[in-house]
Image (cartoon, rainbow, N blue to C red; front, side, top):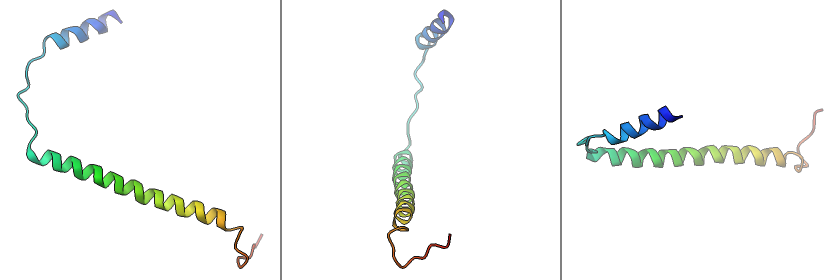
Length: 68
């Protein structure tokens, strides 16, 4: 544990500036990924909700015959 703490301290002490930048398309890709993820979760939830409704409504429909 002491060695790990020492290694982390040395790594932090010896850092140099990266001079990096995010190009303008990065924000667009990030936003598109977030919106796509939300849309995918909504569609998945819609399917799950439909399955749950179908499962619980099977016993309540008088027109459906039970073949067991």
